[in-house]
Image 1 (cartoon, rainbow over the protein chains, first blue to last red):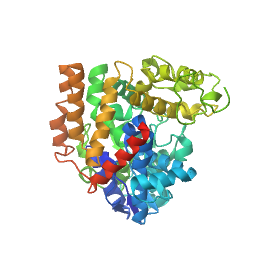
Image 2: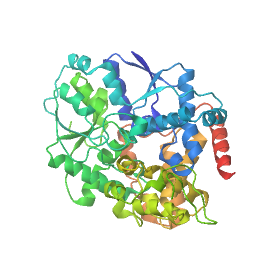
Image 3: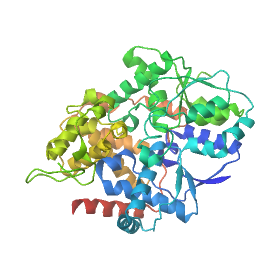
Length: 280
Length: 190
């Protein structure tokens, strides 16, 4: 299988361990990723805070590029990117005048008919049964707290994915690979997302609550499918521990880390050894 | 207030966008689910009420809109389909356009602006450049030395993990990105 790929800035920046993991894992499952040619930033949080037109035009340019490259489906492993792409698509599909004006702004016509997929949806496309059949090392030692955060399921009418109050798609996949999953309270709470630098105080508080709740429900790791969730829970974990005088020592895995692990890939191949919390 | 309509006080500012704010009956579910409500000066339901009453400028001058983490929980749980998260965006845009963010929230505003300048120049985010530009502009504003150097020790640790790129990626057609920005920002002015 071959699909379009929109890495977004994070996966080509300090979250490049996520890209390593996604690529290694999907490669092992026979999925070839073809990067959208000369993609630009989706505008992230900054665009929608400052200028609405920009928050539609930047993702629209990427949708138009994907169309030009002939991709019907595009994987955007960062949920902020995939949400921004889908939000723009929703506006462009329902407002034809806007679609034409945006086409002029971005210097490319845009149909807005690309299927933008998150990482979980790509695993679902491959098929849980097919992934299960490829398992080399069942995840018997894993007690996962599946953490969805905000933008994998919200806004619900834009994303139309899973249940935004009680999602279960990661649990379904991981349990098929031999993992146990825990029932816990913070799976759709926010970690503070992109405010890591601008408002560190909020991020530390929100992320601390998530880690504490996962631990108190018996998890030995938290599983994410978002680069920002990983930064806040993994990279900032030491700062959280210092601030709240606790020891979390909680491994934070990308979903593709655990799938890759079950397929028999090494920590090195998946980039797990580059996480801040790494037990070796 | 009629359904969906955003009223404005006589001589007040009208808010672009439809958020169904008129439909709010103050059940407070948005505030109950908000992960950062305890950091806000005005609760999300109070922000919606101000907009209903046409007091858009007061809402746009609040700390609340910059404490909001855009998690969309409020919108997801609203029984009347008020798009509270969309409303927060619109209020932030208005506050930036009128150069009137609440005092004390300017650091968050500086960050978002530095982020956009970075994208405008490179087409994609250059993290090191963003950190440098944000810290410098925050220092010039607050003259606060500890913030300038906070997390500086993260750099070598990121480097050790191959997570620090000294020459960030740039898109090939950077002039096009400039043109997209020019067109969007000039529309906002008109």
